[in-house]
Length: 83
Image (cartoon, rainbow, N blue to C red):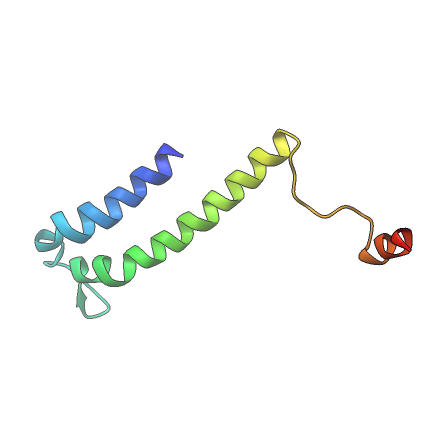
């Protein structure tokens, strides 16, 4: 998870704030690259990081036997037993 946090830091702080001026020499879609990272690129990276984190946590949960997937019993089975 340190890798995900490092990617977040690099994209949000370094590329979006510290290195904006050097990145603005390049253009992506007609916009300066530093501006693109600060406004759009960081959002795309954060969404990808969220999905990667979710998949990693699911894998860890399954490895340790705390999987949250619903059991094979349907809600109908539970309502029949409570009557």
